[in-house]
Image (cartoon, helix red, strand yellow):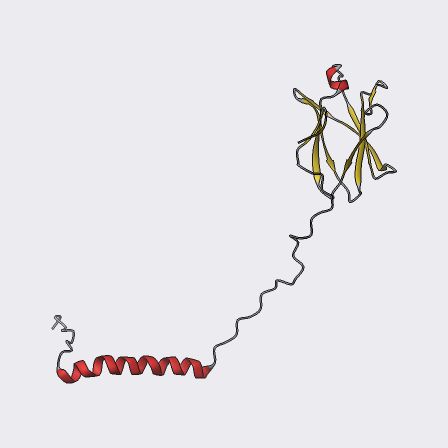
Length: 154
């Protein structure tokens, strides 16, 4: 996703406590700088200020940043030779969104033991099966239409 000219992220939005890849193809890359550093911090006061050397690729300079739970990510770039790309002294600032809680489980999902079947229920099932067999097979036995299996092993 391109949020600003020559700066790309590997995600649609910056989400708190996640990792994001930043790709830079701006002024320093176009001027064929050998190395580029990203100078970044969080929130309006640039908390947790960090400088990281970016990896040079054919597609620009890239680095992975772990976001904190601040409201914004602020950064600028330098080549180590005191040449800066800081968005015309405005720096690059992007909003960090909170992790959506709508999909977060809040209830306890522990398994509860299955209720055991009552003995009376089990006995009622056994009695029903016995009655079914009597009703089905007794008339056949009385009329003689019931064929027994003949054992041919004798």
